[in-house]
Image (cartoon, rainbow, N blue to C red):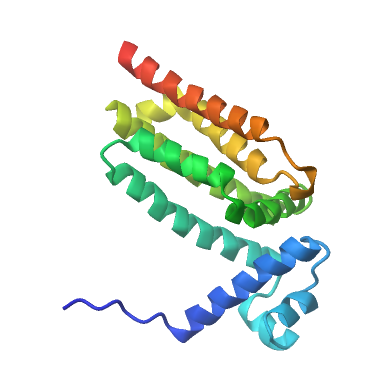
Length: 204
């Protein structure tokens, strides 16, 4: 009988700290949340907090690594589905419309702004976007029967556009009361982008 291995206590604590950092950044902004604020939010002394993360840049890199690990699982499930494009559309619609994703959008808005001023954060954010683009191109390749390199050559711009639209949609300020029509326009644009890939592959 297979049993899941327990998560090491150190990893559990790191995950708890990252979750509290997400909350602090969403509440006070990336620049507004000091290391003291982050330590307090995690229920730790500043000295102990620094043992886990010596800087806010290190926290961002850990957040990106955690989110990428989750996304890797999502994309793996999409590739294993009977209809990868349908599964991808469903996942994108969830990311764009689900209210529970809004807090992450606020966090990434803060990180995107910080990336413009802090090169190390900018590099980490670019690595994340490049990884997501790679995952999308892998789905495009599988769904169209194209080699991965060829799919990247043909449709990398499409992948970047999808990432841009999802990212921009998630970063809308909640107090702006964005019209549902705008959300549907974003989804239709993404649908047309995916349709263009399937038409292009069919013409082959």
